[in-house]
Each structure stands twice: as C-alpha cells, then as structure tokens.
Image (cartoon, rainbow, N blue to C red; front, side, top):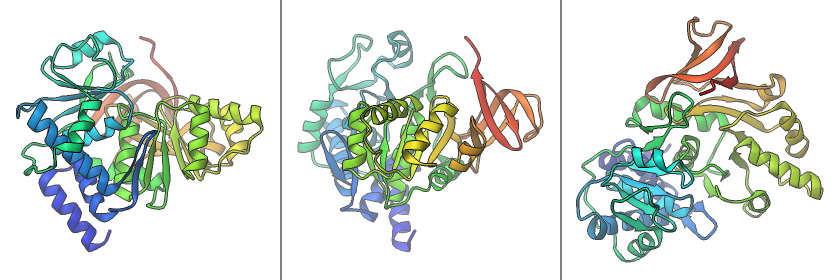
Length: 378
C-alpha cells in the first residue's frame, strides 16, 4: 500500500471505523475508475459503487428512516443487497442480510419489529414493521445526492447462524478489530487475490464467506462478479465472458458445472483458483474438477460466528483428501479436551472473528492438518 493509499484508508477509518464502508470509500479513491462490481444487470466502478451507496444512504436518511436510527434488514440476493449493505454502514446502522428462503419463524423471532426491511419482491408476511423495496432504493440512489456528515455510530453486521453450533439465531458481529483485519488479510493472501483478479462469487452476502469475498475485493482492488442466483450454465458463461480467474462457491455448485461440462464436452473456462466452502468437499468431486481445471482447488472451513478460519491449499487438497488445511493467521482451532495441535479427534472448537466457539462439528487433527468429518445430529 502506497503512502497515498494509506492516507485514503486512514481518512475513511476516521469517518466510519473498521467496517466495509471504510474499505469501500478508500477503494473508491485508490481504484476509482476500475471495475469493482459486476451483476446480472449492472457494472460499477469503485467510484460509482461508493457514490451510489452514499446516495442511497442519503435517501434512506431523508425519506425513509425519518432520521431515526434502526436496524436495516436486507432480504434478497441481487446487486441491491450490496448497495443496501454499504448504505447502512455509511449511516452507521446495524445491517442484517437474510436469505429469503429462511424459516419465517426464525426470522420473525430474530428481526426487531421496528427494523427497516429492504426487500426485492413483495414484502414478506413475517415482518410487520417499516419496509422499502429495492426499486424504491434505486430511485433514492438516483435522486437524493450524497451530502452526509461524519458517521457517529459504528455499524455491525448481524447474520443468522447455520445452527451448527446451536439453534439457528441472529449472531451479532463485533467491530472488525485488529484480529479481524489480520484474519481477512490472511484469507486473501492465502487465496492469492490481487488487484488483477476477477473473482466470481456464487455465495450470497448473508453467508460469512460471501461477505469476506466482498471485503477482500474492496481491499485489493479485484473485480467482484456477484452471481449467487445463477445456474450452472450462466456461471460457466460468466467465467468465460468476464475472464474469471478465481471462483468461489459450494461444492454442489461446482458439481453441477462439472456435470454440464462433461455432458457437453465443452472445454472448461480456465481458472487459477477455485475456493470451495460451506459443504464437505468429496474426493470424487476433486478428481473430476482436477480433470477439468487442473490442481487449483482450495477447501475452506468457517462458520457465521467466526468467518472463514481455515483454508487448504491445492497441494493439501490433492495429498490429503478431506482436509480443510491449517488455520489462518490470527485463528486457533483444536479438539475439545486435547492440547492444541495434538493429534486427536472429537468436537472442534474455533477461536477466530474475535470470539471462541465450540462447534457442532466433529473432526480430527493429523500432523497439524484439520479434517471435518461430520456434524452432530440435532
């Protein structure tokens, strides 16, 4: 990072604290005219992305929120989810991205009644509080300007946990802090993301890994192609048309892409990294993917409460099937009841993302490599 880039970051840090808004504002100055975000409908430069988020924030403040601070809950998976997330952080408000297919009872229990709901289609029945459509948000972003003062609050991101470490519930992230910055920096370094990369994200923002990808691209200046609702054929077309270099998603998504390529006998679009997350990565799928893309597969492990905490390199995936590799710097992982790094098996505990979690996952540590073997039945 150059001295000027550091000054941009320090200036944004003073206004927003350690948050995604800080990364977005600093990147708008560092990488101004470069493409930051590509979605099904829009393309944004880093400058346009931040200016649109600021305009949306001003519109929400003046015309929707009534100048009353409240949580913003975003239901959807499209590009407006990114804008709404950045706008909420620009206002210093807590923001909760949720899956539109989540259990309505869990959402009703987890979302405050007075939260502002930003929704893509019809307003869902489970929320009786104030709401605004993404179409209206786009109108506000186009007409409201962006004359906002300094952020007085430090916003947090609230995610619904998967239930792997207990019943599904709203999880409040703490401010990023030094440990979080170390963890995020270590993740993109281990993947090897640089400003020359074009990153395909198949994982939506309501998952911690999707958020970390957005943050990594804002930090490094890489282009993010956001396509969480696309099918296998659309994802392969995006890889080719956008010249994707790094793709990230669930193993099941890559399995569908592999099947389509095998059936059609199309050549696989070249990739230098594939990052699998959120599901077990079976050795049989690794073998199929290696035949299509070569030895470029990485296997990650994480959870809502901690973010991504471990990542296996392509070499480790090939030589040690099933491993999720070693913890990222700033993270510790162990087996309950055993010394850290001792060869052991049992319930996994994780210290990362500014907290310690005893998970519902069972696994092993062998020669300092971590294996996740299954999840406790509930």
